Length: 284
Image 1 (cartoon, rainbow, N blue to C red):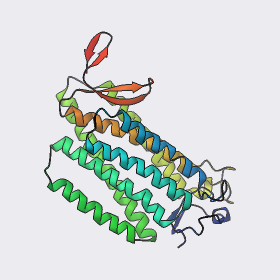
Image 2 (spheres, rainbow, N blue to C red):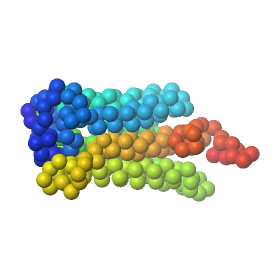
Image 3 (cartoon, rainbow, N blue to C red):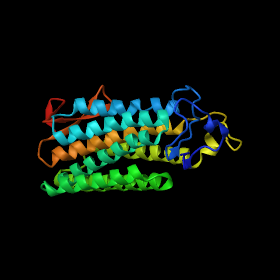
Image 4 (tube, rainbow, N blue to C red):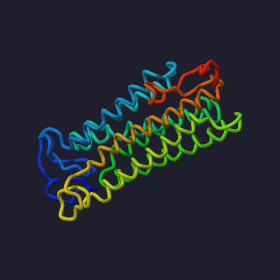
């Protein structure tokens, strides 16, 4: 099955390699099998190191071993591994190993945020989400072509907007219960928002305007391919990491466990529990 949604429009995208023919429902803007005969999209493959690093770092710096967060970070790690397999082969089954963990991690985030905002929901809620995951897994595994591509993208987008909604609600709740805005949290929000906005922008350019930026087609205004989808991997991993730090903060804040934002090596945010020591004064 040839890709139904193809970002490229040049013969350079039709080069054959070890995993040919492509059976995925989408072929991104990177020229196939240019760097290696064994890797379909080289830069889109190696750029997933950003997701793997973010998932690993988040896992090992998490302040305790709460199962829901361990599952979330594990799902993030599987997203990185699945994306390596997908972009490395452009095979349909490998595409599922990329997209389904994205769905699972977003569903786990929804579970965490709903219980942070509204409290424990009982066994019915995880059971409902399990049915949801099973149903969507079946749909995305059996659908093909444009139906598969757009149904997944729309579902994942809705889950991302749910995450934004609950983060916003928890932020408003936290500000009302405190003496004023928290500069560290404001910084996390800005980093997550603007990095995510930039990531989505270059993802859309790569998908919709590839013929103008692929560096090989007659309509390309560039003489080289900037590998925007590879950069999407980097910046989306960064944006999601900062969003997860917000999720962790609000999860512990509503429980009264006094979370605060610390910075590893002075730049990478992590969430600690307890009271922060600042210039001799212990503060939140």
